[in-house]
Image 1 (cartoon, one colour):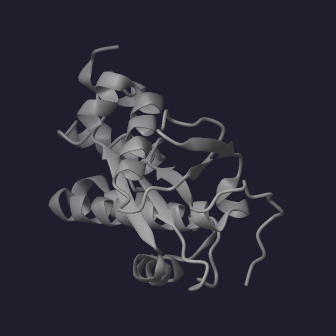
Image 2 (cartoon, one colour):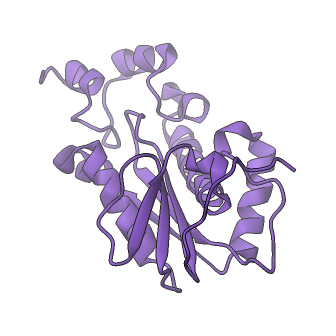
Length: 200
């Protein structure tokens, strides 16, 4: 089992970890998760979701949902991202994930260097998905959820290759976008999409 980097947990009875997936893609929602782990029911193998194989992520996804004291997903759709900008939309999606927990935490640890406005104390943790088990669990829930949504979109629009690049701006994605144009699920405020739409 990978040991987490040292991190001093705040003095709190109930801590939730929060992470997001999908700030960079040109298409689809930004997805967040909030997780409160059960100290009496530990989960082996938690780490940054990007460092795990897809198979391992899927197994942990089910285990986290089964063993966590509470978990919740939050999201912002492309229209909201276009309206708010991606940073604000991510913060709103994080607020939604925390609000959706059926146990209210008294402290929230958020991956990265910014925290949304929350009704309880919160702290940003750089590289949190490598340092805090709760954030790692949240990163896995968010990533698996979003990846599966991209696979569903791929089934509807196979010409774009969403299952492969998950909506991120790759060379193959740019080529597909140029050839097939913009579908509703694209973020119209993102530069490469604006360029195709001719609204720069």
